[in-house]
Length: 193
Image (cartoon, rainbow, N blue to C red; front, side, top):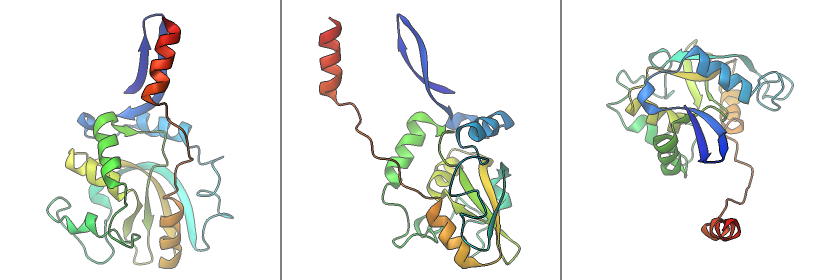
């Protein structure tokens, strides 16, 4: 799905590629689009071995079945939908979940999963198990929608300190921006008339 703005005189302008919740799974084509938006070969800070915490290594971006990784380190949860605690007590978070979780849910519900954002990340840890490192809020929405897989950056680590540091690094803030206001739109419409 491509979210777009339509104007009778202009061609549709692509804003961002997204995968609707009705899709229920990501495809290889979605994965390739994700790699074009956030290219691991050139994106700074989260892929280069010299810039990530010592002990963690980026391997690849790939499709991973949701059942192939664990969500919480403290317990093994067999049924990911039946236990809300796994999402309400996210390992890297001081107070359980991100303060903008409701905004994330609303965005994914309205626009689908946007492929222009840093993808979720999964990491092979010292206990030889894979755990989600970043993206629990998005994952919760995808599981509720019936998704079977995710697009994830896959890492390995030899220590949990590096895992926790990387969880913070990959959950970066957005650049500030000034969205258009209703007044801006009215001004444009008046000018157009």
